[in-house]
Length: 87
Image (tube, one colour):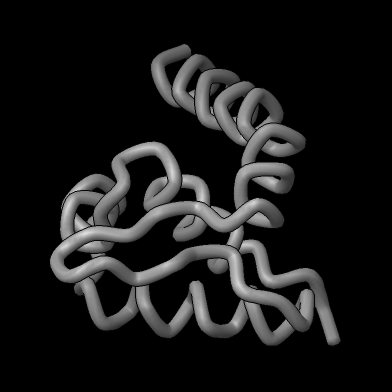
């Protein structure tokens, strides 16, 4: 299975905002698309990354660990991409 880059972006946005709705607004997709990508990433790892809580989500222990590992790299890619766009 190829690395699910869209799912990683959806995970990062959701972990950062704590909401699939806010994550969807941030990256310009539907909340359903965010949910599907999160499910895909959870299937890829074989573990839950979020606990669903009413209107929001909370990172599981595994989700927190993964977010800590990728947070700065994803943000760095976004920053560099924006810098290239404006040159």
